[in-house]
Length: 126
Image 1: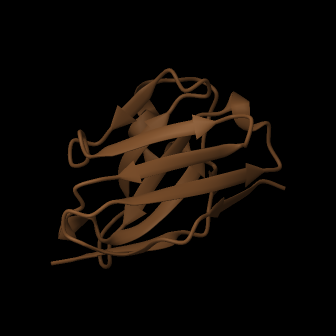
Image 2 (image 1 turned 180 degrees about the horizontal axis):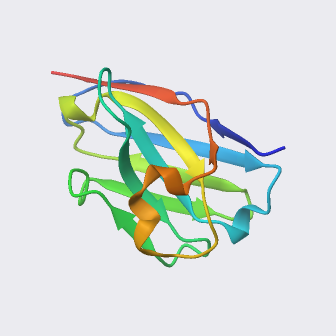
């Protein structure tokens, strides 16, 4: 049984930073791409970033490029999301997701990911 457990999110002021982590179990973590996807109230899921199984490949949504960094530690079966220069529009529930083994053009499609965490709230206030 695959489980993804995100760390607690939090509330920060504009311009602040926050680091999320997600611990995986029940699947050979090092074989699969991982992603972070967010959903704001009343909006569709939005792809944030993804990382390849070996950490070599990363991909970011334009909205977070240069501010967010995804990383992974396969020895700890954990993926991280470092969020800097946070903006109010970053407010959302953040989900980590486990996907496929292949790095392909659909990497930014949330439907690419079969397993999801429970989500963690990030709130950015001005």
